[in-house]
Image (cartoon, rainbow, N blue to C red; front, side, top):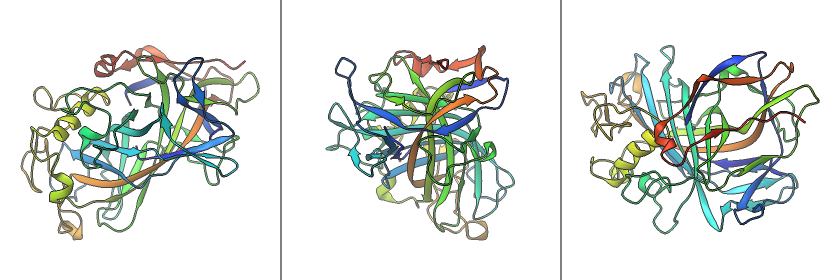
Length: 376
């Protein structure tokens, strides 16, 4: 079973609902599917808790409210990014390469949120309401970390979303830990720090974030790719979901000719892929016409059109900060399998029919079914 995995990642699912009691999410041991050959495929052996660590992830963030460098802080942001998965880590310390049917996997994410107006230079805080995360097989021969059309999430033209090995959707901000049988040190996170991240716009060091996502099933290659194997609390505690706690580390990357070459024209496959991932994985609405769910164009810092993606090129903004509200980052994630449980036994968080929204773009990939199970 796995304690955690590392990836560079964000919902396909917009979720609201009433809760009889605030759920907690505990880190648990899990197994991950290595093949889909029946029956029922091959899973990782042993007590594995980790899902790899990667330093090769990259993300693009478009502040669609402004391109002007802060302060003032604020605005709606759209982030598309990825991180290749590297290793599963067992309790024994053994690591296993992450593959599926012999292919390497990449975590691709689409997240939408808001920048807190109370942020300050050196610590821009964002809270995210929509997180879509897909696990995709990718081709190492054509892969380029700066080219979204090579991440495995889309076809080579960047116009169509590929079938995912696994899909995850957003969970509300909820407490993480303490406890659990896959619990690492310092795993506790209050609900106030979940689905939130910080970024140093002065370019000094790494910044952190925490996200909760639930596993979805249906229309995907590796149904039950993640299976929690420990951690169910005694009856009548109510298990309502299994998923991942994603702990992120990111740092600013200044825009250069090299890292924007695949997205600086609206006809680039990479630029088209950003919009496809935003629409079909994240469920974002078009900004202005078809195929504009992430951006309508590419621009330089100070571009007057906030819908243009205009990433910062230097630290020459107010107070020495980045010279644009749009950013790019190097990003890595560590993933911890989690169970959501209602510790009061009051029924957990159950989505109401009117508030469970699966975005149409993802339905086009084959449909999603929210999976819910009761404690034995």
